[in-house]
Length: 157
Length: 157
DNA sequence: TGGCCATCGTACGTGCACGAACGAAATGGG
DNA sequence: CCCATTTCGTTCGTGCACGTACGATGGCCA
Image (tube, rainbow over all chains, first blue to last red; front, side):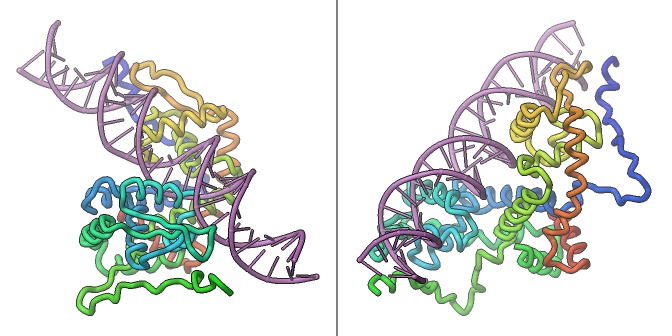
């Protein structure tokens, strides 16, 4: 019985003054976006069909599949990653033989990236699961709410 | 003039078959959540009032300010971080003298965390900017849309 | 009360994220 | 044509995120 008291959750101490509207961290956009993103990533990881492919790697491969060949910087802009982040993502994809690169013949600063045959094969397999992952992430919402959410998120990106 | 051709953006190659609805990565929840979270973090960093405090550190301090004293694990559950992540966040806050810890007298496995005087001072200063950060993040939305977004995000967290 | 199982915190490895600094290459204006 | 500016990719440092494994502790129940 001793020490039992220590297990009880303490009450919040702030009595929230009657004038100032109380500030709850759980109701702030940034907080909710972090949590939502966490959950989306977790669902992606189990649902996309290859536990070793991350969401950013997937986005990159999907874009490379659309455009055939892109410079590293441009790819980064298309998928919303800064160049330092992109560098790591591309390095890992190259290490796994999913992406190949060659110097841009017209601009010596650039590296042109493309999917290997293996990369194409993989991304086309994963693309089949893409819609299901999105569906599962938004499962708690009605179809109309899902449309709303996508629209609202598009506006604040 | 030479090499100019290399700068033109290549057209996407997929002709999107007429039967299957095209899959655009930019319209997937996970992708939008990642981008939105990125933007929210950037706004937080410049707006919260201390560039060295991260969103997760802020959440943790706000919760510790509400509850006075919490075990590391419980704090992690309250702010949605797994224990390994929490460990790093707490370590950095302790290194900066913003958080203090003592062994739980009733349970030798636990560490009780609390804000130092300095930590309290800081979080109360940052809390003033909290609402403005949220406002700025949702600036592109109408007030009604802002309410909707918070509600929808709450449902999928 | 003794042993099984859950919980707590830590440690390690991997990956995303980004600021800053860097050197090489391209560009554009004077 | 030359030099200042910009772009491109890399590297380094810091921090979040989480899986896994570990050892210590606590709770439960047979």
